[in-house]
Length: 277
Image 1 (cartoon, helix red, strand yellow):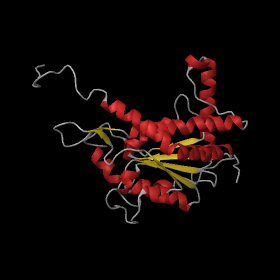
Image 2 (cartoon, rainbow, N blue to C red):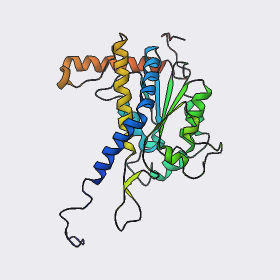
Image 3 (cartoon, rainbow, N blue to C red):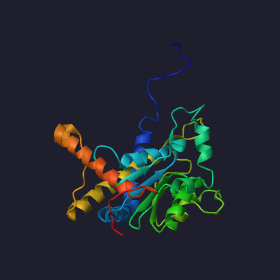
Image 4 (tube, rainbow, N blue to C red):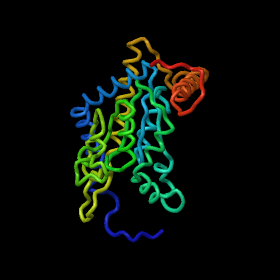
């Protein structure tokens, strides 16, 4: 295939710039948000130890964060990812299930109420809401709805983006205004980190890497807390680590425990299991 690019294509003066910037983001995250992350981990551990559930919600690319928490190797039950496909299925981009529809739906006020009607949160539950911008209707109303049910809300968001411009929700608030604890993703307005000479718009978003760091910091700290208090989490583990038989046992145990906890919170579900008040 003939290239129409001119000049030396062997290297870029910006090689490594995104990685170096992302590394600084992670360092800054640990310094400035470490206390909030540890507080979130403590709340999550207390919830899981009390037979609660830490629900995780995000629209758009925030789906990556909630799936990183559970289920995957190195994760354990007690976390419940809530991913609405209508707002998170991006790979078709255009046409049916396209990005335009997803971006429209997450701005529709009242839609979160329909999502919440499926769930009967318990008093020891928590909701973590992931949204970089913090201004679209559905994440805001998920947070407001959960707090109305009396449970704590943790917002994982870009504080800079929340504060930029005027709120677009009819309440005049952003996600960070509707949370009991805020963890700042530390990214600039617009998320992208690198400015290219001759290009008006920056390139290379950074929120995914800090959000994944937040998720795994919380996951590790929660596991440590549980073990130190005599609770052994059923960690989904690779056969290459624990062997095939133990991997299968842990997989089945983790999924059974997840099903037990979640089934207790599905609106109208019939179950004989009991849950602590």
